[in-house]
Structure formats: structure tokens, C-alpha cells
Image (cartoon, rainbow, N blue to C red):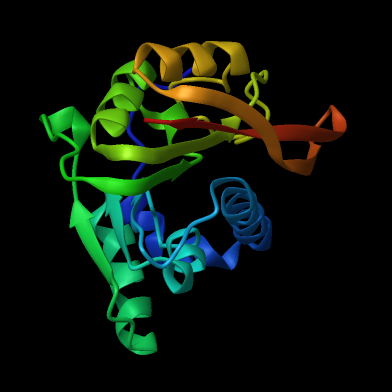
Length: 210
């Protein structure tokens, strides 16, 4: 069952990082991005759907600049608080709501997105937008769940897709004009699911180059 109602991420922002499993997943995905995309100090990066910046701030020391982009002002405020308290000069935030007609603009050497795609009505359209915002030679790296039965979130409010087929996502990358498209397993999340025992949910990372 997919829930069309939007999740209130503003409301959840203050406690978002209190979930250790969520933090671990973000760090595992960030580690996979760093390993596969090899961010460098000459790069300007974008983290689309950045939330509280768990991936953003893992990239921060490795790149020239990183922009955290999200449709939740509450999440961006949480990231801004971290940036201020740590005195980081190369991180900025940007509010953008695709459902209100927002468009991803700018030129980036690296664009990443972690666990955001399943909240987006048109994944193919988003991937095309992100690819369009890459500079020549830039890399797009998108992480999300493999197809699942809806057990992962428990409350599927705002979950528009129950994971994805990796081949379908690779196809979206290729149709967006990206080359050298490849995939890895970025993480495996183990969860106890009521009535179903302990389950493992793989998280893919698909990468492509402009």
C-alpha cells in the first residue's frame, strides 16, 4: 500500500538523528559514495534530499563546496544549525520543492541523493533533472531501497514507491544521457518486522557519468 499523503518532515526534523539505524544507514551510503565516486577538493557537490545533512557533512571535508537541498525547511534548519556550530564555510543550504514546480539548477561535479527517490512522484523526471545539473564529466550517485513489500518503513505515509528495481533505475540514468552506469550494494539494513521476524533490506547505489 502506497500512501500519497506527504510526510511531515518538518515535524520530524528535531528528532531525526536520534535514530541510530538511520544515522548508520546514511553513513554507510556516504562511505559507498566516497568509495565509488571519489569526491575531490576541486569538486562542487549537491546532496539532493539532504535532510539533516548526515550525508552532506560526510562529503563536506572532501569537496570544495557542498549544497544541501531539501523540500523541508525544518530539515534544512537542522543542517544549518550543525553548519553554524561547526563553523563550516563550504556548506550552504537550498530549499526546493519539486511538487511546487521547483527545478534543480546549477552546475555540479558530483550530485548525490540518498533514500529520497521513494518519496518522489516521478523518479525518472528527477534523475533527468539531476543529470542536467551535472557539469561535463560529473557523477550522479543515487541510493535507495531495492523493491520491497512495504515492511521497511512500517508507516508508509509519504512513501510513493516500495523500493525500486535496479535495472529500471539504471535505465533512467541511461535515458538521461549518463554513461558508465553501474551499481553496487551500499548497505544492508537488518530490521525486526512485526509478524515477519528479522528481515534484511538491501540499499543500492547507482552511479553514472555525464
